[in-house]
Image 1 (cartoon, each protein chain N blue to C red):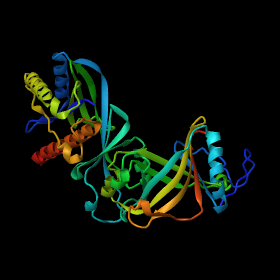
Image 2: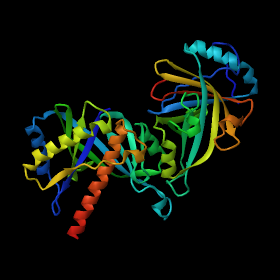
Image 3: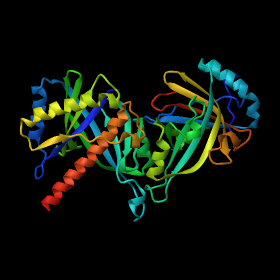
Image 4: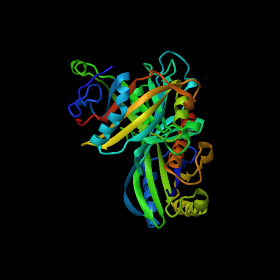
Length: 201
Length: 222
């Protein structure tokens, strides 16, 4: 649980606090986990973010397939995520036509990272054509688990492209059954801020 | 996107490819009024799995290729011919593969040379060399018909141009000829409308031919 004081709205446990991290050329993801008291303020956060960002929110419904390398592949086990955007008009979810490949690095460590009250991880992602799932299966990756993220996102520019996502994380009770997903941690929303790591935010 | 045939040089039995042949081919293009425009370069990388223990690699793909094409500088292509799969992704996919540490480069090749304009056709003649080496492993040629993007509709034009080209080249009495082998694009899930994925599949097919030719030469030597 993270509670932050926002200088703009003078409220506790409402806002994301942006940190500047130089980590090279990768995207930086800043993750906050906000507790059940936050839920009543989700709408308020949305309004504040809309004002800050100057853009309308986008609905977010992402089917995330987490693949892990088979036991003998690679010096160490590796994990890759394939994202299917269920908000797209094309019925991708029925054919599992994932279009984004994402690798999320480990949490940043060190004295600087310990002073941060948020979790910072590097991320690299790439758009891909529709058979990326089949490719990774052929390469020796297997489905470890799948998630459904539901929420909203703001994409805006402040010297660099920044994305703020507020979402709940859900699990499927049956394979690929996104319509029957249930929250993994009811009442908890995840706030993610992503930006290019080469620029301060 | 316009149609492209990718050809490779097939040396006669008992001969090998050399830079003199490459020069003759380039001169032949210019002799039929091809206008030299500039350089081009494509790359092809063979990946191999990193295996933790002494286990068989049979469960992993044998020919896992990564390809860059000059007309798509921000894209990267993966082809696994045996599984009939081609993938187009952003360049960042290479960084992801590096992060995963599950596959590494076995060998990387450059396809590079000059580009020529010849009426409705664009030709590219290039040598195949390993990265960080000038050892010639093959000669390739791209033959692009600019007005059309349908494979079926442009086939006749390309066939006729190919015949003209072969005839012009035959006058130089070179020890070999260019070969065009059209992959079964449908097996790769590709349609009649030509795309860079079609080009990537052609390069993967050519690579198989170059390897087969090299192995045949090696067998004769042994």
